[in-house]
Length: 439
RNA sequence: GACCCGUUCGUCCAGCGGUUAGGACUCCGCCCUUUCACGGCGGCAACACGGGUUCGAAUCCCGUACGGGUCGCCA
Image (cartoon, rainbow, N blue to C red; front, side):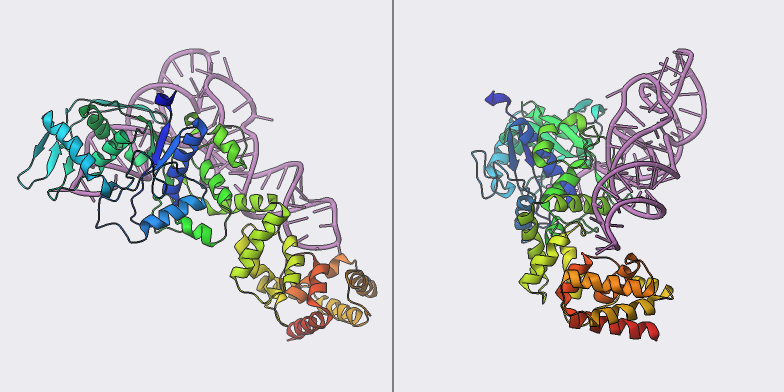
């Protein structure tokens, strides 16, 4: 069994932050390894020193860990097929180059660059996603080593996959056309190539290829914006893979259990932030009380707000079904701070359209002034009384009350809000709104 | 330009010869709710085009168009 154990890898180059395309590729490799009970290897392809950035490696490791994709072998973990940085594997590359030299399969140019002699025969790629694809080989011989002695991607990639015992190469479809080269190299080295699976690419909403600089491209951004990693993973898994029934919200264990090549489709997909937000909202709602509190309070603390712990304990739980990302929280509960609150322009507009708005606000003010205590029941009774004095249904007063108290058209339970605000602040805000409507 | 891959609602997926072409997001309506959400119900909306094959094609074949990719001493 050990000889057939699945080994997959993710091999990013540290040229920027981990982006969603790379994360999705990593995820598919990780999922497949976990699905099969195999190993997932992380290898850093840092052969091009000019393109590496200082904290590129750190950003990748951090992003991977945030998403929950722990690697079995690789940086900071080790393993017996290391080192896991290409910059430290020069000896291995030299060794394999010697193999090719001994077989007379390479030649050196005047400037010292080394090229591989392509057999020139058609190569068939039997891809797990794309099916059988045949390529004729009439391209120029590929360079595998630069004049300065450093090696080129195709060669190191193949050498490493071979040395690391990678059994399944799952990568972006942009590599499909490179695969014949890789297969030629494997064969030249006397080894059988791994199984390939080329997965569709992730595109921008406008159909262009998503790259590092595009909106929503950096995994770090999602971490910073307090997305739930499991939601991002869930969404990413669904981009190009389907469990085939109509399930969309899947726990990670189920994704692992059901993930397999037949479920991967062939066409590119555009990244839809709105749907990611929905997935996040669904998972946020599904969180148990204490886990939700952890995320919600962290998001609020990060915003450095002037709201008491006691108030947060009351208001935050009410917000669980009202935001899709925890980072939306600070803005939504900002009205609890200070005496005044900003008025949402649309809410104000809607209020201004109702000719009775001022009457309603005046009646409410009077009813609130008459209250002897400020609790949910008494406030509720006051609103009821105001409604009665206007011969209106209580429901008709809720919107004006909400806008006056919070400045917003929607939000958490109104009575809770009014209690938290306190009678003084509520009356102050009602009078302010009344004055504004009058002008 | 050559070669390769792809093409089902605006978007993500289902469909793998016979379906009123299904689900999800978004948007709109209704219900629930004292309000706001959640939830429920309903609606709008798609098989790129042209030829075949077949009794029958979204499904198979061939072309065209469009999109993407590769052809680096980038990875």
